[in-house]
Amino acid sequence: MSISGKNFMLFAAVAAVLCVIAAVQSVAVAVTIVNLCLVSAVMSLGLNIQWGYAGLPNLGVMGFAALGGLAVVLVSAPGVPAAIAAGGPGLIASFVVVVVTVAAVVGIRRLTSLSRATRVAAVIAVLALGYLILGRYFGPAKNLIEAIDPSATGYLGGLGLPVLLSWPVGALFAAAAAWLVGKIALGLRGDYLAIASLGISEIIIAVLKNEDWLSRGVKNVVGLPRPLPDELGLAGTPWLQSLAIQFGISPPDAAALVVKLGYSALFMLVLAFLLLLSEKALHSPWGRMIYAVRDNEIAASAMGKDVKNLHLIVFVIGAAVIGLAGAMLVTLDGQFTPGTYQPLRFTFLIWVMVIVGGSGNNWGAVLGALIIWTCWIEADPIGTWLIQHSIGWLPSGNAMREQLTANASQMRLIVMGVILLVTLRFKPGGLIPERH
Image (cartoon, rainbow, N blue to C red; front, side, top):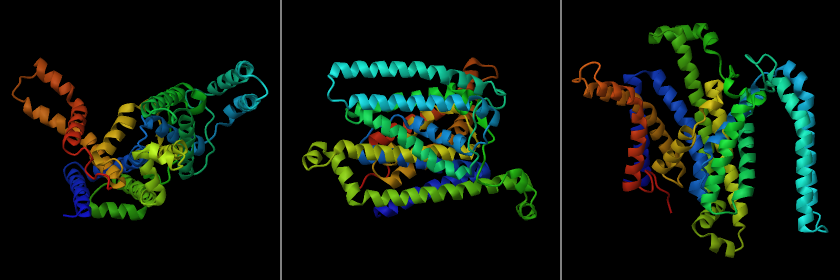
């Protein structure tokens, strides 16, 4: 069987599993899994661009995805006029202070007529002065904003623009953060880049959780605009009611299913577009150059390639794709919840997807996302069913039975560990390995 034939069979097997889920559980559950698989596939594509193409270890996937989600709030959420009026002037003054401070620091660093010690002292003095002035404006402005109806708003809100516009903005937010991380850490060894990206990611999440004026922190932003019709309004339309009667389901269930299928179509378009661009880039002279830099930096540098700049470009592109996926996920959920951004979901699982699917292969990254997310979702109910039927002989109230039943959800972690170990042992290149 050819390589393309094997790949087709792998994707067909995943499709068959999803059909079984639709038959055994429900079509709505299967479509929900598909939507989350598609978003995860976009994230794994972004990580594959960084790790698979250039060998750059990014442990900050969570932070870049969160920045994409923040973009949805800042772009599409309705603004809060009272908060803007109360704290807007102070925030504008704070922004001016930051810009002036940064410009002063850059100007001082370029004064070659001064000694190094004098420049360092001047930079420290400017930063200290800027920090003191910033605190005079930012603190009071922040308090004023958060005091505006904190149970419902307590933040600035957004621009009230169409939510789809927030997707490219989320990519830009993540790309800007990646540029900052890359400028600091890409000149260091790979393990230092991994640590730096992880640290920046945790800082981003900490800011989103604690700065209520920006995104309500752990209070969450709910009711975000969506690109598709509302289920309640859709359920009242004649054509959908007729469709629901034909399939023997209630109009609200039919409306929810139609909306989910609409998201599936939208996400598939985005994924197909990114796959097309990724494949074009991978097989272009630029892609071959990136592979050459990854495999032998010294030789590439000796031939005149700017290795650090190439790494920075790849790192920024990959982070932008992850940020786009983060915006897609928040749009699907209709809410922004900073507390849910955990490394297990948004970093570890994405890495497992790339490893299992095949690092360096775009189709492998997509396949890994489909397999891993499906296993992650179904491991809980299947594990619970297996445990309940395997301990049925134990009497009710038995300590072992209660313990196993209470921890059935931990089967997810066991399944992920087994899949990862088996892949690394028998298919270290992934199910669809990189083609040389």
